[in-house]
Structures are given as C-alpha cells and as structure tokens.
Length: 375
Ligand SMILES: [Zn+2]
Figure: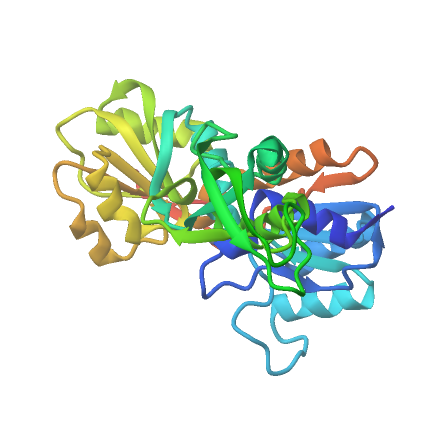
C-alpha cells in the first residue's frame, strides 16, 4: 500500500502544479493525502459511471485529467452527473486527483501522447513557458563539486535535451564575520580571503525552493551568498502545444484522412484545403485556438486542436489548415501516458485505465444518400 501523497508527489515530479494555468483546479480534489491506496483508475473525466467502475474494480484512487471540481461548488446534490460522481466517490471513500493543465504544459504529457499517435518527429513546444531562473553562488574551490552535484541531483541545470549544465569561474571571495559569527574558514572578527568558484546553474520556478534548501545543506558557509536572477529565456521543456513533422508531406485531403485513421475519428471540422502540402503540424490537445499565432510563427502547415468556434475558422488562411478533431479525441491518449508513468514508478501499485468512453459529445452525421448516421 502507498500513501496517496506518494502517488501524487510522483505525478507532480512529472507535471509540477506550478505549471498549471491560473484558472485551473488541479491536485487532490477529494481525499486525504495520508490515506493508503493500492489501486488507481485513470480516466480523462470523472463521471458517475467512472466512479462506479472504480467501485467495481476496487480502485481507491481516481486520477483524471479534467478536474471534477472546477468552478467552485455552492452545494452538493445529485442534480448533475459530476455532483453524483462526487457524492458516490465520497460515500465509497474513493479519492480523486486531477492532473490537468500542468500535464498539458510538459513536453511528455498530453501533447506528447497525441504527437506519438501522429508519428510526429523533430518536436518542440509551440509556446514555451518562461519560468526560468539563474542561480549564482560562490563556493570554496574544495566544495565546488559537492555543491554542484547536489544541485544537479534535484534537477538544476536542465536545458532542453541536456542536463547537468553549469558554468564556473574562479576568483577570490572575502568576508569578515562579526564576533557572534562562526565561520567555517577563518575566525570571527578576522578579514579572510578564500579562493572560491562562482557557480551558475539554470532552474525552473518549481525547483527554486528545493535548490536553495539543497544549496544551504551542501555549502560549507554559515552565511551562503547567492543571487537568483529571473531570465527572459524560454523553457524548452514546458509550455503549451507542440509542433513536429510528418514523415512525408501530405495534401490536405490525405492529411485529413491520416488524422481520421491514426486517431480513429468520426468527424473532423476543418478550414478549406490549402494548396501547399502539409509537413509541419502544430497540435494542442483540448481547446487550443489561442496558439494559432504560435503555430503560424513556427511555420506550421496545419494546426490540430479542439473546441473551435465558427469565427475561429475564418482565421485560417490559405497557408494553414485548421482542424478541430474534438476535445475528448485530442486528449484521451493521455490516459495511457499516465498509466505507464505510474506503472514505471511504482512496482506494487495497480494502475488501470478506464474502459468507459466519457466523451459527452455524440455525433449524428448526415451522409450523401440522405441517410443519417449515428455513432
Ligand atoms: Zn481537456
């Protein structure tokens, strides 16, 4: 058995809550973080049927992408499906955790799952997050490696596909401790000069507090000198949407068919076909229209997302094919991603994927011979 907190800590290593967008409500929504659990059910949404499935399969934790509590609740009564789900979960002591826009904004989350299905290569983030800082500290030469390695161990110094990136320059530090001080080098009240290294590493905001704690634990000085500088650099690992390339260029019609086949889609709403072939494809699972400008800037030939409105399609000109594949259809691939992540991290913890299609949108498609087709 594991504490819920162990499971959620692992998920938050992957998708730090600080990456979530301000309107979001991710995290442990129902339950006690210290409660023991042995089986989780992963789903895109928490519906009454999903909670029922968790009860039947004896899963005591549901991990969902969409938060079942989102806009705030003034009362709980069985009037809507989500409120019935909440009541049922509490009655059966089932905890619910949401991993939402934080999973949208890591490079191995929701968009990675969609990019995998589309076999996109040469991937990068469509709109990189800017949450980078530089930590600069001054370490006696003999302690440089210990401090640097400790910072690397918590994830400092990650740049794109590289880790353990740092820089140091040698110099001479000076200090004079007051009578109440207890210097590790020199004596209180004595002016001291020490050969030091100026060490610089990159940090994300999620690492700031642990980096300072680690620095103070491993640095020999009573008073550790450091600077934290906010950077304008973009974070290559975190952000919204993704862009990548198809293995071969496709015409608009062939690309639509490719989407249908790869993603098992019944319906794609899209802008007019474009003359150029499609090679570079931007994607954003869920509602991603705001990223159209980024898709354009990065030279995408097509932008695949969901929840587009009528007027949004007018924004696609003849150089870009805009496709709405459906919200559920763009995101449900992440269920497997979450399941695999937890299975990799915990040997004795059962993780199941829901067998329920929670898509609330159904399609009735009229076909040319006049007969309607229902899903
Ligand atoms: Zn979504």
